[in-house]
Length: 245
Picture 1: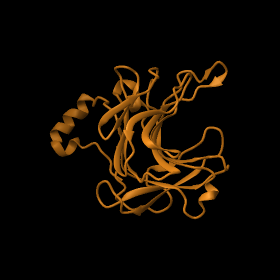
Picture 2: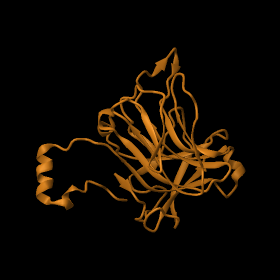
Picture 3: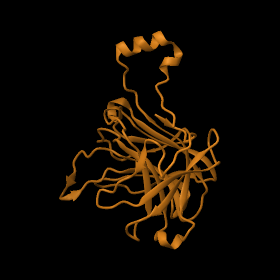
Protein backbone atom coordinates (compact mmCIF):
# COMPACT_ATOMS: atom_id res chain seq x y z
CA UNK A 1 0.00 0.00 0.00
CA UNK A 2 1.43 3.38 -1.01
CA UNK A 3 0.37 6.86 0.04
CA UNK A 4 2.02 9.57 -2.04
CA UNK A 5 -0.19 12.43 -0.73
CA UNK A 6 -0.66 13.91 -4.20
CA UNK A 7 -4.46 14.02 -4.12
CA UNK A 8 -5.82 16.93 -2.08
CA UNK A 9 -8.05 16.25 0.92
CA UNK A 10 -10.34 18.19 3.19
CA UNK A 11 -10.22 18.09 6.97
CA UNK A 12 -7.30 17.18 9.20
CA UNK A 13 -6.46 13.72 7.83
CA UNK A 14 -5.71 12.25 4.44
CA UNK A 15 -8.21 9.60 3.30
CA UNK A 16 -7.45 6.33 5.06
CA UNK A 17 -5.63 8.00 7.97
CA UNK A 18 -6.53 8.94 11.53
CA UNK A 19 -5.05 10.36 14.72
CA UNK A 20 -3.19 7.67 16.67
CA UNK A 21 -4.54 6.56 20.01
CA UNK A 22 -2.78 6.38 23.37
CA UNK A 23 -3.38 3.24 25.42
CA UNK A 24 -3.43 5.08 28.74
CA UNK A 25 -5.75 8.00 28.01
CA UNK A 26 -6.49 10.81 25.61
CA UNK A 27 -3.84 11.13 22.90
CA UNK A 28 -2.05 14.20 21.59
CA UNK A 29 -3.59 15.47 18.37
CA UNK A 30 -1.60 15.45 15.15
CA UNK A 31 -2.95 17.01 11.97
CA UNK A 32 -1.98 16.14 8.42
CA UNK A 33 -1.75 19.25 6.28
CA UNK A 34 -1.09 19.07 2.55
CA UNK A 35 0.47 22.47 2.50
CA UNK A 36 4.05 21.90 1.48
CA UNK A 37 5.58 21.67 -1.96
CA UNK A 38 8.60 20.03 -0.37
CA UNK A 39 8.10 16.63 -1.96
CA UNK A 40 10.16 13.51 -2.46
CA UNK A 41 8.18 12.62 -5.57
CA UNK A 42 5.43 14.41 -7.46
CA UNK A 43 4.31 17.86 -6.35
CA UNK A 44 3.32 17.58 -2.70
CA UNK A 45 4.57 16.27 0.61
CA UNK A 46 2.60 15.97 3.84
CA UNK A 47 3.26 18.08 6.94
CA UNK A 48 2.44 16.40 10.25
CA UNK A 49 1.70 19.12 12.80
CA UNK A 50 1.58 18.60 16.57
CA UNK A 51 -1.62 20.55 17.14
CA UNK A 52 -2.57 19.94 20.77
CA UNK A 53 -1.88 17.78 23.82
CA UNK A 54 -4.08 16.83 26.79
CA UNK A 55 -1.12 17.15 29.18
CA UNK A 56 1.88 19.49 29.10
CA UNK A 57 4.40 16.68 29.61
CA UNK A 58 3.52 14.96 26.31
CA UNK A 59 6.12 15.31 23.59
CA UNK A 60 4.60 13.57 20.55
CA UNK A 61 1.81 13.59 18.00
CA UNK A 62 1.12 10.65 15.71
CA UNK A 63 -1.07 9.51 12.85
CA UNK A 64 -1.64 6.09 11.34
CA UNK A 65 -3.29 4.49 8.31
CA UNK A 66 -6.51 2.62 9.05
CA UNK A 67 -7.51 -0.88 7.99
CA UNK A 68 -4.02 -2.40 8.02
CA UNK A 69 -4.39 -6.16 7.49
CA UNK A 70 -2.92 -7.75 10.61
CA UNK A 71 -2.64 -11.15 8.92
CA UNK A 72 -0.49 -9.71 6.16
CA UNK A 73 1.84 -8.17 8.76
CA UNK A 74 2.67 -11.51 10.41
CA UNK A 75 6.30 -12.58 10.70
CA UNK A 76 6.24 -15.33 8.09
CA UNK A 77 5.49 -12.73 5.41
CA UNK A 78 8.48 -10.44 6.18
CA UNK A 79 6.30 -7.32 6.68
CA UNK A 80 7.77 -3.84 6.33
CA UNK A 81 6.98 -0.15 6.80
CA UNK A 82 8.72 2.67 4.95
CA UNK A 83 8.47 6.43 4.56
CA UNK A 84 10.49 9.29 3.15
CA UNK A 85 11.31 11.92 5.77
CA UNK A 86 12.53 15.43 5.00
CA UNK A 87 14.97 16.08 7.80
CA UNK A 88 15.29 19.79 8.55
CA UNK A 89 17.74 18.93 11.36
CA UNK A 90 16.19 21.43 13.71
CA UNK A 91 16.77 21.29 17.45
CA UNK A 92 13.65 20.40 19.39
CA UNK A 93 11.68 18.57 16.69
CA UNK A 94 12.15 15.36 14.68
CA UNK A 95 10.21 12.68 12.82
CA UNK A 96 10.02 8.92 13.23
CA UNK A 97 8.19 5.96 11.74
CA UNK A 98 6.74 3.51 14.24
CA UNK A 99 5.15 0.10 14.65
CA UNK A 100 3.51 -1.66 17.60
CA UNK A 101 3.87 -5.45 17.28
CA UNK A 102 1.46 -7.70 19.13
CA UNK A 103 2.27 -8.50 22.75
CA UNK A 104 3.93 -11.86 23.23
CA UNK A 105 3.64 -11.54 27.00
CA UNK A 106 1.51 -8.53 28.05
CA UNK A 107 2.95 -8.53 31.56
CA UNK A 108 6.39 -9.50 32.84
CA UNK A 109 7.01 -9.53 36.57
CA UNK A 110 3.82 -7.55 37.06
CA UNK A 111 4.86 -4.74 34.72
CA UNK A 112 3.46 -3.95 31.30
CA UNK A 113 5.69 -5.18 28.48
CA UNK A 114 5.65 -2.50 25.79
CA UNK A 115 6.48 -3.54 22.22
CA UNK A 116 6.68 -0.13 20.50
CA UNK A 117 9.38 0.30 17.85
CA UNK A 118 10.57 3.69 16.57
CA UNK A 119 13.11 4.77 13.98
CA UNK A 120 14.26 8.19 12.79
CA UNK A 121 15.43 11.44 14.32
CA UNK A 122 15.27 12.45 17.98
CA UNK A 123 14.08 15.88 19.02
CA UNK A 124 16.74 16.23 21.72
CA UNK A 125 19.67 14.75 19.79
CA UNK A 126 20.76 16.03 16.39
CA UNK A 127 23.92 13.99 15.75
CA UNK A 128 22.70 10.67 14.28
CA UNK A 129 19.59 8.68 13.38
CA UNK A 130 18.39 6.29 16.08
CA UNK A 131 16.09 3.31 16.62
CA UNK A 132 14.55 1.80 19.73
CA UNK A 133 12.63 -1.36 20.57
CA UNK A 134 10.70 -1.38 23.85
CA UNK A 135 10.40 -4.38 26.14
CA UNK A 136 11.98 -6.12 29.09
CA UNK A 137 15.74 -5.43 29.21
CA UNK A 138 15.43 -2.92 26.39
CA UNK A 139 18.73 -1.43 25.27
CA UNK A 140 17.09 1.95 24.87
CA UNK A 141 17.88 4.25 21.98
CA UNK A 142 20.54 2.84 19.66
CA UNK A 143 22.55 5.06 17.34
CA UNK A 144 22.83 4.01 13.71
CA UNK A 145 26.19 5.76 13.51
CA UNK A 146 24.90 7.68 10.51
CA UNK A 147 24.91 11.45 10.87
CA UNK A 148 21.68 13.35 10.37
CA UNK A 149 21.67 15.63 7.36
CA UNK A 150 19.22 18.05 5.82
CA UNK A 151 17.18 16.54 2.99
CA UNK A 152 15.13 13.48 2.11
CA UNK A 153 15.89 10.15 3.77
CA UNK A 154 14.10 6.81 3.55
CA UNK A 155 13.29 5.21 6.90
CA UNK A 156 12.33 1.53 6.71
CA UNK A 157 11.81 -1.27 9.22
CA UNK A 158 11.19 -4.90 8.33
CA UNK A 159 10.44 -7.94 10.47
CA UNK A 160 12.51 -10.88 9.29
CA UNK A 161 11.00 -14.35 9.18
CA UNK A 162 14.55 -15.73 9.32
CA UNK A 163 15.64 -14.38 12.72
CA UNK A 164 12.50 -12.81 14.25
CA UNK A 165 14.16 -9.42 14.57
CA UNK A 166 13.12 -6.07 13.15
CA UNK A 167 15.82 -4.70 10.84
CA UNK A 168 16.28 -0.99 10.20
CA UNK A 169 17.26 0.52 6.87
CA UNK A 170 18.32 4.10 6.16
CA UNK A 171 18.36 5.09 2.50
CA UNK A 172 18.40 1.43 1.53
CA UNK A 173 21.29 0.40 3.78
CA UNK A 174 20.79 -1.71 6.92
CA UNK A 175 21.89 0.23 9.99
CA UNK A 176 20.77 -2.01 12.86
CA UNK A 177 18.37 -4.59 14.23
CA UNK A 178 16.18 -4.98 17.31
CA UNK A 179 17.51 -6.80 20.35
CA UNK A 180 14.20 -8.70 20.53
CA UNK A 181 13.59 -11.73 18.34
CA UNK A 182 10.24 -12.87 19.75
CA UNK A 183 7.95 -10.82 17.53
CA UNK A 184 5.04 -12.65 15.90
CA UNK A 185 4.11 -9.72 13.67
CA UNK A 186 4.86 -6.07 12.93
CA UNK A 187 1.37 -5.17 14.08
CA UNK A 188 -1.48 -3.27 12.48
CA UNK A 189 -0.66 -0.08 14.42
CA UNK A 190 1.94 1.59 12.20
CA UNK A 191 2.45 5.24 11.38
CA UNK A 192 4.33 8.51 11.73
CA UNK A 193 5.47 10.61 14.67
CA UNK A 194 6.30 14.26 15.14
CA UNK A 195 8.39 14.41 18.30
CA UNK A 196 9.06 17.74 19.99
CA UNK A 197 10.52 19.42 23.05
CA UNK A 198 7.68 19.86 25.54
CA UNK A 199 5.65 21.74 26.55
CA UNK A 200 3.79 22.30 23.30
CA UNK A 201 2.44 25.57 24.67
CA UNK A 202 5.96 27.04 24.55
CA UNK A 203 5.93 26.79 20.74
CA UNK A 204 3.15 29.37 20.43
CA UNK A 205 1.66 29.66 16.95
CA UNK A 206 4.72 28.07 15.30
CA UNK A 207 3.72 24.53 16.24
CA UNK A 208 6.30 21.76 15.68
CA UNK A 209 5.90 19.71 12.52
CA UNK A 210 7.69 17.25 10.26
CA UNK A 211 7.49 16.66 6.50
CA UNK A 212 6.79 13.26 4.90
CA UNK A 213 6.15 11.65 1.55
CA UNK A 214 5.66 8.22 -0.05
CA UNK A 215 4.56 6.23 3.00
CA UNK A 216 4.45 2.50 2.20
CA UNK A 217 3.80 -0.80 3.92
CA UNK A 218 3.57 -4.34 2.63
CA UNK A 219 4.62 -7.96 2.92
CA UNK A 220 5.22 -11.13 0.92
CA UNK A 221 1.79 -12.67 1.31
CA UNK A 222 1.45 -15.46 -1.29
CA UNK A 223 -1.15 -14.77 -3.97
CA UNK A 224 -3.73 -17.59 -4.26
CA UNK A 225 -3.28 -19.63 -7.43
CA UNK A 226 -6.73 -18.74 -8.80
CA UNK A 227 -6.06 -15.03 -8.35
CA UNK A 228 -2.61 -15.35 -9.88
CA UNK A 229 -4.04 -17.04 -12.98
CA UNK A 230 -6.56 -14.25 -13.34
CA UNK A 231 -3.81 -11.64 -13.02
CA UNK A 232 -1.70 -13.36 -15.64
CA UNK A 233 -4.69 -13.24 -17.94
CA UNK A 234 -4.91 -9.49 -17.42
CA UNK A 235 -1.28 -8.94 -18.28
CA UNK A 236 1.19 -6.66 -16.53
CA UNK A 237 -1.44 -4.00 -15.78
CA UNK A 238 -3.36 -6.44 -13.59
CA UNK A 239 -0.40 -7.09 -11.32
CA UNK A 240 -0.23 -3.58 -9.78
CA UNK A 241 -1.88 -4.39 -6.45
CA UNK A 242 -1.17 -0.93 -5.07
CA UNK A 243 -3.27 1.94 -3.79
CA UNK A 244 -2.27 5.57 -4.24
CA UNK A 245 -3.66 8.40 -2.09
